[in-house]
Amino acid sequence: MNNQQEISTLNDLLHITNDRIEGFEKVEGKVWEMYPDVKDEYDHMISQSKIMKNELINLITEKQGAPEDSPSIAGAVHRTWIDIKNSFTMGNLVESTLENVVFGEKAAIEAYQNALDTGYLSEKTTAIVSEQLRNLKSSYRQFKKIEEYKKKE
Image (cartoon, rainbow, N blue to C red; front, side, top):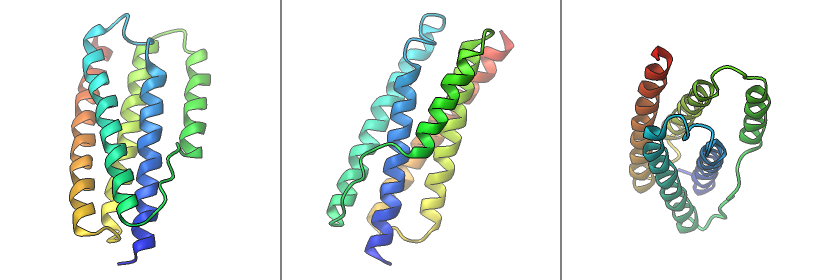
């Protein structure tokens, strides 16, 4: 196992986690007025993401790596695309926003699973990343249910 490969993999996850935080914070105010019942879960996801971020930074620094504590370029492009899409969405902005959350969570799950599948992670790192993946899957399921519920309204 190469230490640099592990650090690189962790930095990729850090970028994704930062994308997740920025994406969540960008949604603030768009959904809450119509569906305040969703806000508590969303706030939990933001808090959870910040904890995940700190765990990743700690793992990187323990490996003598430099945390690349910024969002990814792909994430920035995706958020810009969402902004453009939402500016033309006269219909159900809430539904569109929930779809974007579900899409983002699914992408994060895939990235985390890919990181675990590389074999580049140490035993300690694998345990932490696996726990973070479980949290991502849980939030994905919750928001998928909310998205489906809102579509039925």
